[in-house]
Every structure is written in C-alpha cells, then in structure tokens.
Image 1: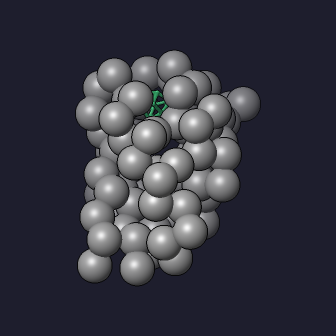
Image 2: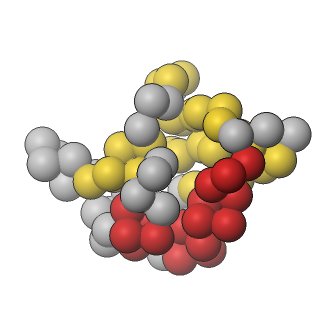
Length: 75
Ligand code: SF4
C-alpha cells in the first residue's frame, strides 16, 4: 500500500506533479494549486492510501516538486 501526502497550502502551482503522475494529481482551475485526487484533508495535509501501481510515478512527482510538499511512503 502506498500512502501519498500533499501539504497543499504550500503548492506553488508549477504543474510538475500533475504531468508526471496524472493518476494522482490534477491542477485546480479554481486556485491554481494541485489536487491530490480522492484524498482526505486533515489540517492542510491531504492524504490517500492507494495501491502500488502508481509508485514510480508518485516518486517522480515527489522528486520533482520544487517545494518538497509531497510525501510518498510504502506501508
Ligand atoms: S510539484 Fe509541488 S509545487 Fe508543483 S504543482 Fe505539484 S505539489 Fe505544487
């Protein structure tokens, strides 16, 4: 199981994560920040548990994020 977390408030809207991992991230037209699809918001930390199919893409998005607000853990 993969746990992906996004600290959304700090997103600068660069679009890298949505390009590298569109299965998990999509840019919001409302505020220009990324959305972690189907995630739960807990005090600004948006989290999903997903299967490991997306591990490589999620890791690429994590590495590309210039403000380091994406966390990817395998549990
Ligand atoms: S890579 Fe980081 S800063 Fe860029 S849109 Fe995604 S979460 Fe936001």
